[in-house]
Length: 220
Image (cartoon, rainbow, N blue to C red; front, side):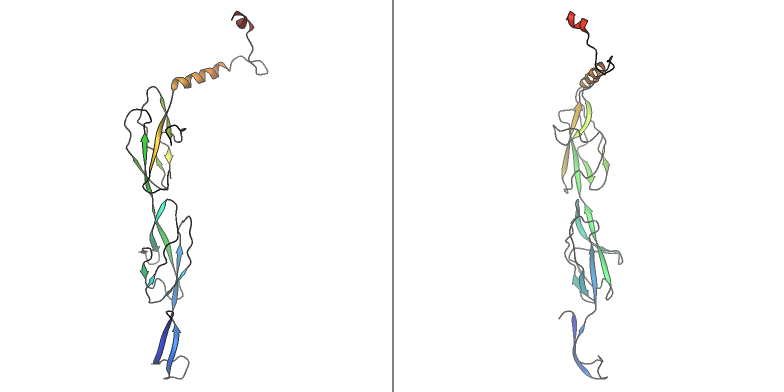
C-alpha cells in the first residue's frame, strides 16, 4: 500500500516492550494540494492528497476561462510556477494544504478596417488583447461628399462603433481577425430631413393641427 511504510524486523518501539521486533504497516504523513480556478468561467477540481517526501504529479487542469489559455499553476507561498501535470514534492508540510492558483494567458486578436467603397489608407491592422479596453484607430477614409458615420460589423450593417470608440472583447478567439466596415451618411439627405422637420413645425392651431390654406388650394 503506497500510503503506508512496511516496518519489519527492526527494533522499533510501537507500544510494545522496548527492544521488541515489529512487522507492521505505519501510515505515511500526507498533505493536501488544492486548486483555485482564479477567475475561471467553468470547471471544478477536487483537492489532491500527496505523500510527504514522495514525488506527485499534479492533477490535470479542468478549468476554463473565456478569452484565455491555461498556462499553469502558481504557488504564492513558495513563489513558484508549475506546468500542467508537473511532478512536485512537499508543496506543504504534513497535514497542511498547498493552494495552487491557475495562471491564464489572455488571447490576442486583430481589428482591421474596410473602406467599404471609400478611398484612402487606414491602419492595416490594430492589435488587441482580451479584457483590455482600447480606442479604435481614427478613421482616415473618405467617400465623396459623404460624412463618416462610424464602423459597422458587416458591409451593409448599421453603425456599431463611433470613430475612435473605446472597445473591448470584440472576440474571444485567439488569433482571430475582426473586420469593421466604414459607414457614411449623405450630408444633403441629412440637411433635407432637417429642413422638412422645420417646415412641419410652423403655425399650428391650438389643438396642434396645421391650418389648411384654402386659397392656395383653390389657385392650384
